[in-house]
Image (cartoon, rainbow, N blue to C red; front, side):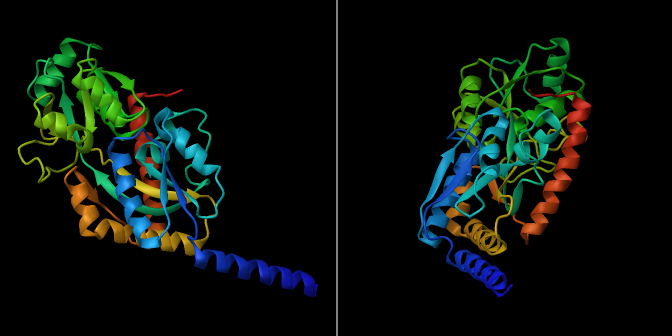
Length: 320
């Protein structure tokens, strides 16, 4: 009995020591999209800040595929020792449980919430060959040409996909979804005229918008934004009730020790408040949107799952 008690005490002491010493080696940050899009840019900016704060390299591991579910599945199966963290977003963490019949992970059971990081502003942008200059003209054209408009996304279940499906439902139109392995790849095809429309993050669209290679029609947020004061919201431009908040946050595998969760939460929030990170992300329409505790982020994840379950049901969207 005394040996068993001593063993339990030793394990508890050792675990506490490991958590307090964390991190003492490089950390892998799984980013479930291809390089170049808003999620990737955010992960790299925060990763650099964490590297400086902890003195340990944050290694970005891009694992694109299936709308982000490939990367999250890898993260869910990783050891809960604090040396694998995952950047998650509304798609694979809160939408795909309704979108996929056989999701390989449970978004509540298999992850430990750490921090809700940012909101990434999205724009409704079209190729110049599409003969529309407003949301109302887009709706009229889509109704006159059913299934002739292809809208791209960074993957099934991600914010730009759900924005397109919500637009279809609320505007009473039928645009065809074309998923890509990341927003940057979708933008290449939009600029090239291979697709006609994206609800794109500002970070992937801003260069082409400034060059006049694509045309912005509206922002997807509930309210107008200072960065594009001339653009209406999709809702006020002709689709009442439309609003999509595209966010990125950070989670760990199930069972991540509490001390590590709190350390990571505090440092991620500190990084997002730093002038260097803020200036890098603000210019791309990626804005800090933190929550006070990991538990608050967990509650937010649950509320987003409920919200988008209704959107998926109403739109009839599926992904296999």
